[in-house]
Amino acid sequence: MHLIYNQSTDPAFNLALEEYVLTRLTGEFILLWRNARAVIIGRNQNAVEEVDMDYAREQNISVNRRMSGGGAVFHDLGNVNYTVIKEQGEDDFGGYAEFTGPVIAFLAEMGVVVELSGRNDLTVEGMKISGNAQASKNGRIMHHGTLLYDVSVGDLAGVLRPNQAKISSKGIKSVRSRVTNLVEHLPEKMEPEEFLRRLYDFYLRSRSDVVERRLTEEEIAAVRKLADEKYATWEWNFGYSPKYDLQKDQRFDFGTVDVRLSVSAGVMKEVKIFGDFFGMEEIAGLEELLTGVLHRREAIEQALAQVDLGQYIHGISMEQLLSLF
Image (cartoon, one colour):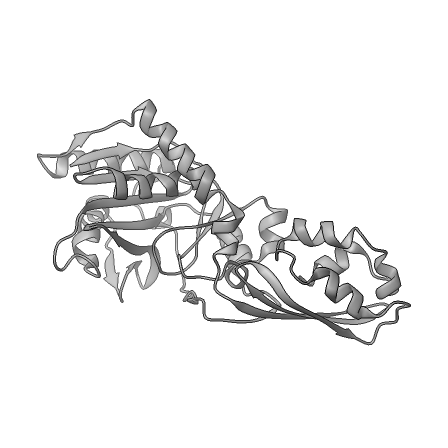
């Protein structure tokens, strides 16, 4: 078994590394890693439905889609992640106990009693400290999990809170659970880096066949290429979202504006704008302008910059209208 301490904190690179090891390497691997601030959504989720995009943009929190299913999770440098990749056995997929067992044993050694709860969560005193997910490809399985060691609970609550918009889609919804940080339960406090190092050492001595492994320059370049072409792209992180309908309205000084969208493959296929506002131009002209545009702030802003918004909705600013998309 190869043990890799991946010191990158780039979410796109780290997710690409998982796919690279799963699909292009052979043998058994354990990856330990951390991400800079990011929301990692499941493969089948609607990014817009899971993330408060205004909060994410204001706080410079990236949104990245992983290749496994399950719900959205918040990562920062206080979150420690582990990934196990190997040839898939008959009962491996959905068999979370085998993969979480070593983590539970490590935490018991650290003085924390942890239980595998429900399908794929680890809990302490009934509160979630770890979510786990799996993916399978070409006879190999990847199991990965989070360990909330000392995560910013404020950012977690802020960026994952339900959006004001009304969204209807077939994306898999996240199940919100009460969470806690492991650092609050440890008899001995330490920095996240030290906690990760101790987990690394535990894996190293837990089995006689575990060997340390470093990525080669060629492997790093290949992973970076995959990250740039897939995991860092808008098309994967947002455009891959299932078809959805969105409705959002707000009362302004000049009147109420109600925006309704039908989005498929990340493109606004239908745009309708209602309200009791005034305007000199028919609102249908603005709706037509936005139809076919990517449901992406930058793309919408670029389209709106072509016209005088006040001619369609008297008194509205660019920022006010963008807030409804």
